[in-house]
Length: 287
Image: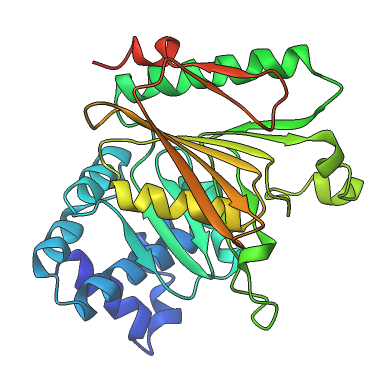
């Protein structure tokens, strides 16, 4: 009996409760929690409903190791899976179990699963070059900074949510972000301490991985600005010449606009006073 049949048997059979006492598989699931199993089943249902037999076959070969799950995601085109109907409680539990090796977002109640970023040494070095520069500015402007964040942090974006559907939340993680003090102080002390604070950063930078399409990154940057981010900068070294886009909201046109720059030497922020992003300090690690 293969893994899929075992899962379906225990999930659908009326004999589920007696089986709890006999199956090592169920004992393992209880030990690690039910959310990984929920994720697994949703993946199977998604692939089955879309008749994606090739991906489904690969998924059945995946066990629980980090590398196998990442390899499976990388085999998809694009390398991501979207699962509907994920509530905030499920998302937080999944994050606690899988955040060490998956990049997860919640977009209007839909769970988006992507490979970890960075997934190779060049992206890691590039992200480091960004964080160091932003971190230095934060150190020099402590009186202005509420909280900085890396890709390990995430924010709940209230402006992208429909108040009629309170369980369909939107939570996104930036590569690098800064929430200025004035904006962070608009939250209560209790709200500041929750896992995904309901505040949009003032400033965001995203570095495009070669595994993320240009359109997908563009859509994410637009969403950041729609959510209330004042300045969102995307960096793409996967095209020649490289391109930096600076996204912002134009109140006169009432829409998100962006200013593309080809292979710039530096990028001056209009939100972080005096901050200049030195592109050479990022590019020198990207071949």
